[in-house]
Image (cartoon, rainbow, N blue to C red; front, side):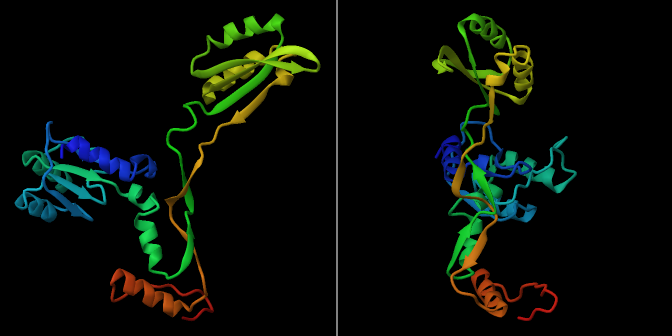
Length: 261
């Protein structure tokens, strides 16, 4: 596949917008296009040893769960191991893609896989994800009613305020009078200017409503999981389930005061 087509498919599988704001996800290193991917190399952490293996396997793209580039690089030299990863990747035309917390958030991702080790349980995200593209760019919606005498003047002033969108007008009847209902979406900064403008008119301001726009939650998507077991079990049983699911000989455990296994 062409690299850009492959990245598009990966982004469709788990959108980078689902990742935490502090994270660094998506395509981190891109060889000059066109770049065809025949061999995709998977790893949990892209170390120098893993990069050498990817080079030997003639990989065209490395998908590393943890992002090898996290803080901004001010230079790309042979001095630090993360810089050397970028140098080796570009020299050998190897792209690097990292999903990290985007793969934690998706319903079929890492957190749900971890929860399966607990046995039969109901699982919900601790911090639900929100839809990335809805509503529009504005943060607030402002609505007010104006009569014909004031409508044109206030609309001309509002249209001069930056960061306002979705400005609409509809006929309305208020207190038996024919008026016009104005609705607009705006940013936090523009909201202050709109409120300042409307507050100058004692007839408009009392008829003003301000709504905070919130993006809809995405079902079963988000950070962490709160798991409620179908039947209660002992702590020692849970430990054995976790060890078996993760194929670990040992786990570290802090037992609460006065509690037992």
